[in-house]
Length: 107
Image (cartoon, rainbow, N blue to C red):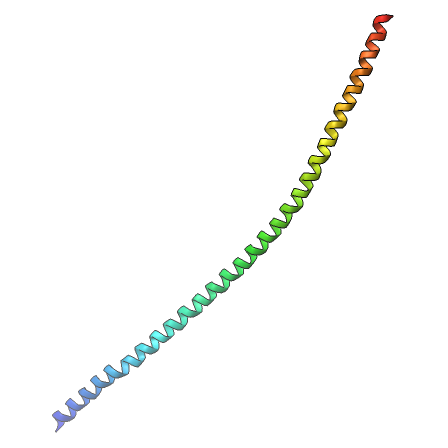
């Protein structure tokens, strides 16, 4: 009988190990999966925050570029007007210089 009891206890131990370890392994797998999910969620939140910041930065940069384009256009128009004014004033200067030179020659 003691042999049967020993064999029975070995069988119970074997059954426990076979069936008891599986839920334990599943629990470990579940814990690992939950940890992986938390890590993925943290990464997703960080990526989302970075994306949102980048989108805001791009929008601000685009707005700044539009303002700079307007300033550039206004600057070009002013430079064109300044160039015309310079050309006209140089013509007047050259004309006045020529008249003065002519007056000196006639003296």
